[in-house]
Image (cartoon, rainbow, N blue to C red; front, side, top):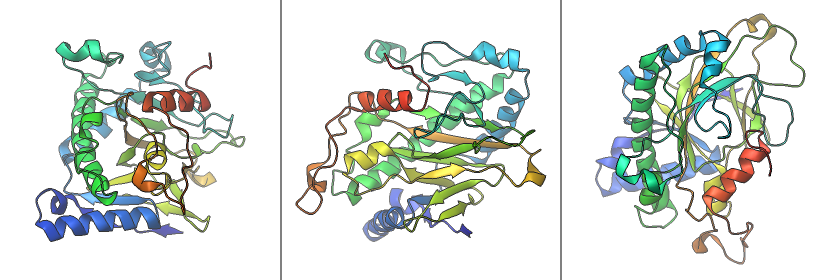
Length: 318
């Protein structure tokens, strides 16, 4: 079963009158309570950047594996550059996902680099426009995410700009993913096992094939298809933790296609919006009361990220 995602016009929040802005905030909150995913249009990502990043993503993944492996960087938990097939798994599974991916991160101004412990972005020599469009998409999605978080802040009765400083140079990741063709019957592996995202919110540029499913409140898997020119935005675990489950991180997965379509590939490009490591994820006081007691121990975003990277197999426990 598939479902239409609620579509919201981001311009109504950015440029609308007070009533339009409030309606956007309310509709956003209600959509997250109902299914946990929304679609937005009139965002910051242009069609040109979207189309070209998918084009050059396909060119990158068409390179021989020995070439791609040049861009795998040891010792940084896959936070920049290339990660090969089956390395990552969902936190409750030991079976590697049937995907390979590449990570773009923040480009910190030279004068501020001493404040942030981020690895430099990895530059792919063979497909130079992959780098260019990756960084352009990163900037556009970061800007879109800023406005989405401003709306979320208002829904939570916080200052509208509560998240701004935390995300300006946050640890966000743009991940072009390649789900390859299936040649043999999979052993307990879907393309991406059921999971929740680690970060505050995820912005999904779209996907070239069906397969994304979300788990609704009745424990039914619902197929989600991104509409043309829209971004799909969902809540992640950091925001769930911060809000003491007022906003719930949505369980989702990418399923294998029917056997007759095993020869197909799928490309997807999510943007995982993270705050800077020092942001506290302690439950907000206005989300804790007698009816909803505090569920989570105090933790920083950096500590929580490290814990989750270990759970999904990208970082070894020390």
